[in-house]
Image (cartoon, rainbow, N blue to C red):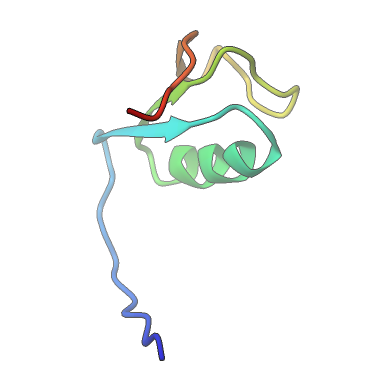
Length: 65
């Protein structure tokens, strides 16, 4: 059985990477930007909900090794 442990992290000015540019990533990006994080999105494409002016977009596909 899993027992999640809630934590709070101050992400102000911290670099945070999000892998993928779809709807789930957009929700994560929104929360991270609200937390004042410096967000890097690694994805070949972005959905319309992600504003490329508010993030650093690395136009690259991530592969498994």
